[in-house]
Image (cartoon, rainbow, N blue to C red; front, side):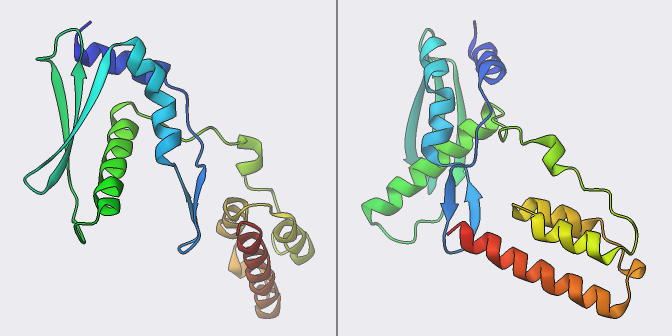
Length: 180
């Protein structure tokens, strides 16, 4: 197999990945370096594909190499600003570049979420009690956002809409606090 065939084979066999990291400061989930590399490590070894990382011309270059024919290479260059010359800075740049290269090259997708849970719940138009209950029962920010996107402000009075907005804010804060 040539390198491009190996890359396609790895992409076809790679499992989806779950966002296992959480940024406390900005309050979002992300794919950690460990989760991304774990998703392809055994497949890279099986297909004899090596990874080389170099810093060149202000960029971090991640190169995938066919170990059976080392002249076959695919490079990904990441222009990453270096805030300082601390070892942690260089390590973070390398980790991010490798992670991004693997995610994009091997088409690593988010682990499938429960599709039924993600579907918006059918709410009778203007039924404030049913809507308040749905908001209060939302378990994730994504569920809460789906409910909000499917609301028609015109179906509620101004007081009802304000009541819904307040419940949304309270539930959102509770979900964010529980993820800390």
